[in-house]
Structure formats: structure tokens, C-alpha cells
Length: 325
Ligand code: PEP
Ligand code: MG
View (cartoon, rainbow, N blue to C red):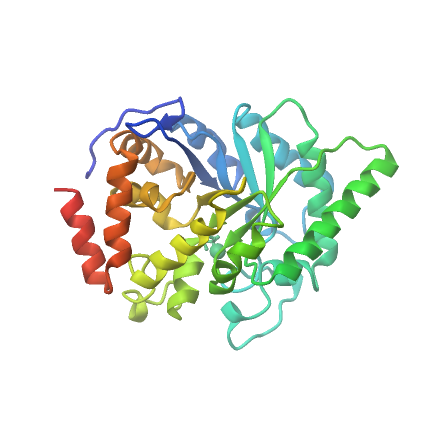
């Protein structure tokens, strides 16, 4: 609670009854790396690479990107670094890309849609830099994640491109490794398709900022509909549950990297919903780590069951309030 100092834990944490939960940080620039490590993050659960492309005249080339990813891996030698490929469009414009003027940019050409379309060259360059960084043995483990997936074909196509990039590097005699490969679950389509998507990936990361926006048809950042576009809405919780359910009995791990993951008052609920990893702005890492250690899985599951049974946001909130008293 407000202003209270919370102990920083360098070590990874588990629930009071021994289930490990990875607590990672979201980063955008290299300036975010040191604070993330200092706050005790286990790794990076979301590297928003848009920031490498903003406020400049032309895109960063392969070597510049390689350096940035290499630096992130060095900051977490024992951790995992999940790098999201370029997520441009929607609310994230870039001058030199000459983005189309769309009436509904959030429903338009953004994220993976651009990477498989007009930004195909940028996508390939980014993947080359990522595969080279994954081949470094000095740092942590690199994972690549696709934004705004809504079909199985997108994932298949992106994976084929990644494989052809690997083949090119092989032919050129350039050192590389094939990274872990995953997708963000941030559209209702991806949540519905999760049972199919598990066949094509090693992990999911739920982006609740966009997932809430698209499940509720309520624009993120629009205060007139912020009550609707809230992750405490039962429909959002059920989309999360459906996603996690699809991973049960598989080797696919499931994390969350939207705002929701960083609220320590929701940690017990998220553990109960079955998340393996939570990634957030570095500030709340210590609070979330502490909240993980203070819950048990049966208690968390019981809370999640009650929250999932609620049919209104007010009921969800009542269940959550009750659990913290
Ligand atoms: C999300 O949508 O929840 C997310 C983490 O991605 P971004 O906020 O960068 O769109
Ligand atoms: Mg998003």
C-alpha cells in the first residue's frame, strides 16, 4: 500500500506452497534495463521494440538492433528476455513508415499485420538481429514474441520467415540460435484460437491492455469508456481463463504482460487463473514478488473460481475486496 517500502528480492519466488512464478519487467529502452534488474526482476517479459524505432529519421539497422538485444540479454544473464517484434500502428505512429490514414487504426494494419505486409523488410532485419543475439552465449535466454496475432496463418507465416532467416544466417556462416517463439494473446480471436495456437508456439503472453480493449469494444485510453475497458470485467477474466486452459497439459507456458500483471492486489487472482509468469513495469516487481509468496495455490484457485463465477464487474470487485480483508 501507498508509499510503503517493500523488500527487493533478487531471487525468483514461489507461492507459500511452492509453485514458482516468474516475475519479470516490461522495458522499452536501454534506460529501463538497470532499474529492472535493481528492482529484482527475474528477466524481461516484454521488450517493446517500438522505442528503438521512434524519434528518428530512419529505422535502426541490423547491427544497432543486435546491440540493443545483446545488452538486454547481458542485463539478465540468468533470466529470460522476451522481445516483441515491432508493434506499430494503432496508437503507435512512426513518421518514416508512412502509415496509412485509417478510420479505425486500432482495427487496422498494426502489429504482426504490418510485419507480414508493408514492413516485411523491417521484420526480416529484426529477426536477423534477434537470431544473432539469441546465439550469444554470454547472456540470458532470448524469446521472440509476435504482437496482435489473430489467426493461425499469421503465426505459421511468421515462423516460416524466422526459419528462412535462420537458413540465410547458416549459409552466411553467421553465428545465431533459434529462439523460443511465442505470441501475445491480445485479441478475442487469439483467445478463442488458443487451443490451436498452442500447436505452433512455445509460450503465450496475455496483453490485457489490448485484450480488454478488444473484448469489450472499448478504446484504451478513452475515459468515456474506461469502466467498460477494464480488466476486472468478467468477459476479460473469462478470456484470460480460456487462454490459460488451452495450455493445460501442454509444454506451452503462459504469462501476462499487460497492466493487470503489475497490480499486487490482483496477484493472487492471477496465480489462481494459472499464469506462470507476470511481467510489469519495474516499479511494482517487489510488491508482486511479495504477493506471490503470500498466497497458496488452493487459496488462489478458490479466489479465481469465485471471480470467474461473477457476472458483473461490481461482483468481481466485491470478490477481490473480500479476499484482501
Ligand atoms: C498489451 O496490449 O497489454 C500490451 C502489453 O502491449 P501494449 O500495451 O504495448 O500494446
Ligand atoms: Mg498490446
